[in-house]
Structures are given as structure tokens and as C-alpha cells.
Image (cartoon, rainbow, N blue to C red):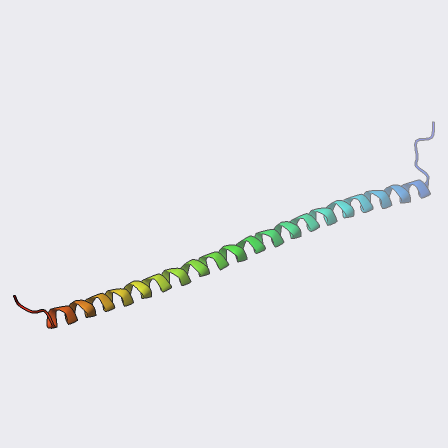
Length: 85
């Protein structure tokens, strides 16, 4: 009984194993790249949201500070012109 594999079949078998393993690793690589892109996009979106929140906080702080200044100025003016009864 002859159990040897002819050379052409062996070449084909090696080619198929190489092709399948390459295709598998290429698919993994594409998957990893896609995941990396999604992660990067999510990070960018979170960064944008944090930046927007920081801007809003800053605006709110300035508005509060300005309203406090105007309120204290109004109080000073009221105290200056208050008429004793």
C-alpha cells in the first residue's frame, strides 16, 4: 500500500494551508484594525464631549462671577443712595 503523497498534491496542500492561515490572519488584522478605529473614534468623541463640558463650565463660572459682580454693584449703589427714614 502506497501512503506517499504525490508532489503536486503536497504543493497544493502547502499552498492551501498557507492561503488559509494568511486569510485568517488577514481577517484578524482587519478585525483588529476596525476595532482600533472604533476605539479611536470613541476616544475622540469622548474627548470632544469633555471639551464641550469644560467650555460650558467655564462659561457658567464667568456668567456667575459677572452676575455676582453686577449684584454687588447694584447693592453698593442701593446702599449709597438709600435714604434714611
